[in-house]
Amino acid sequence: MNEINSNETRNIILDVAEKLIYKSGIAATGMDLLVKTAGVSRKSIYRYFANKDDLIVAALQRRDERWMHWFSSEVDKAPTPRARLLNLFTVLKTWFDSEGFRGCAFINTSGETGDPQNPVRQVAKLHKQKLLDYVTRLCTEQGVESPDALARQLLILIDGAITVALVMGDHSAADQAQNILKSLLAETE
Image (cartoon, rainbow, N blue to C red; front, side, top):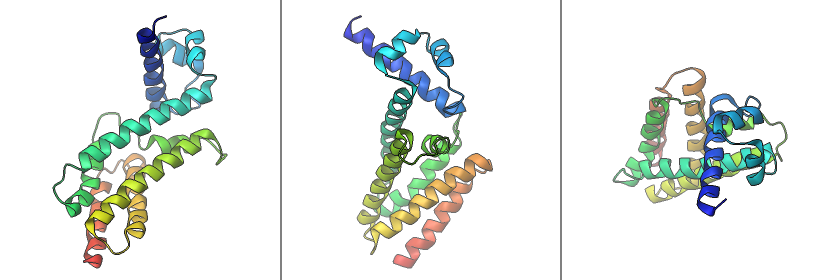
């Protein structure tokens, strides 16, 4: 198998795994379903991934990179530091309104693993840390007195809005979170 086909096969496996995990969860995504949906042999999957856990971790790492790139690129389109902070929730609402929205893949998969040391939980923790670091940067650019503290509050607002949008079906959770942020910013001005 040449390198191009090899990378293509690996990418197909990762794409299918990510979609199935996001749609139905880790437990519901068995190897038989992966094989059938990806149109590859079980042997092909094991050529790239030692086991299902390794595949799940790789799929989540890939989702982290893609989602963070998408999110930060969209948020950063706003012209000023304050507008970028507010845009966090405008961008989230766009995501909530998109077809196939199933909440945060990292919160969802973490809920399926009990052990905090589980590699899936570690990927989720790293994702949330990257998100926190990004939001901290935005808070610093805004010039707030305590950017770390505000960023931690915003992480809670972000994850809360995502959860409410998924569980309650209330996509206006992003608007409500944005209004809370406006109040928090007014306190710092």
